[in-house]
Image (cartoon, rainbow, N blue to C red):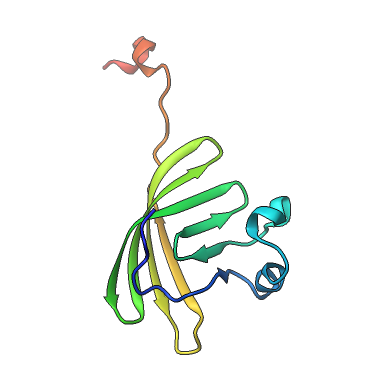
Length: 114
């Protein structure tokens, strides 16, 4: 995992309710109760999903671009996150998921050949 240089300290939740839940439990302790997304310096965690930051590059003092290795329901895929800190300290996170379909057994399917 990459050390996210310049990212704000702390753990951020995608909702106010999520922030309240994180006051008493970690994302792992919440289990199925993790109905929000959590962002920290190491990556992003959601229910049955984890993205570890591989590299984080500062755009300026309050915005970053992060590449991540993500795993979800048996699939691994790369992802890209744009993170910007607002004046009130909240984070705006935009993600671009690049998940391709898996084509299993396509080589054995003669109809796949044109």
